[in-house]
Amino acid sequence: MKGSLKIVTRCVAFFVIFSMIFANTSDYLRRPDDESDEIHAFYDEPKDSIDVLFMGSSPILRGVSPMVMWEQEGFTGYVRASALQAPNVTYGLLSESLEYQSPKLVVLLCDNIFLEYDFAQREGDLRRSLDGMKMSKQKFQIVSEITAADDRQTLLSYLFPLFRYHERWKEIDWSEAEPMPLLEHSFKKGNVYLRGGEPLAYPDHFMEPSDTATPAFDADAKNYIEKTINLCKEKNIPILLLHLPKMAWSYEQSQAMEGFAKEMGADYLDFDRESVRNQLNLDPAADYYDQGHMNLSGSIKLSGWFGEYLDSIYDLTDHRNEDAYQRWDEDYQIYAESTKLKS
Image (tube, rainbow, N blue to C red; front, side, top):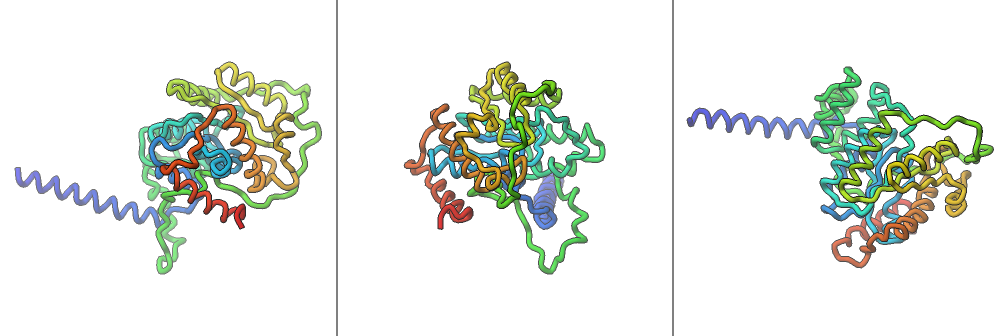
């Protein structure tokens, strides 16, 4: 009996020591990535403290600033988004997020309902989301679907990124190397803003009806977006389907999205509809980073209008005078200094 206990104790000790060394080595080999960091920093938010979850791909990652909304309206939000985020990743991230938070609203960017997602070609984009996620049943499910579709990617490399990044040994100057652990707390609340950009102009006849056929939804994308909407319904959480400013967008796509939202019993807001664009007063020569993303000035302008809209429609709580949310004031001061909103 004593011999068996010793063996178990030694095995446990070995596993603990191995895990510590493994984790520390991974921190040296990991490629720093703002999107993975922001997804990971979500776990630091106090339980049930987030009013609005913003989910989806890069336009919402770049365009929505929860800090602007906090300063202006007083509700809390977090963006769990990444570039070219696959619909099954969004579903898994939301499912996981709802184990930590009980939001009053989910905002889902779902332009990718028209796109076929090729897991084999998008490994880098997939890892931006998944490297920031903790181990969970949702992460395991997402990775299982990816590896089933692309046998060049492995379950082990997603669950233990060291197995994917081990080749970086050759790139690192170990005399100067420092560990780069994932971000623990974010003052940006998931927003990864972009500075600069080239002056642009709206395309001719932008968002005008045309003879173009109604675009088709991708079946897999539609399936996961439906699952995401239904998950919110099961939890009695209102969901807003969203399209953010994007010059490669059409009247026909907007109409198709609005019809889908009605069919699913979800709200829909399209920032490229003329009525919204006129209220936003975005300047394509100054507020866009590229044709599909806001830059910092555009993000601040958009988030100010959007925060007021969300508060007026969904009657979100103003926490600005609550002691439990003092850290949000502190984070806003850092955000304001970082973005030059505060001189």
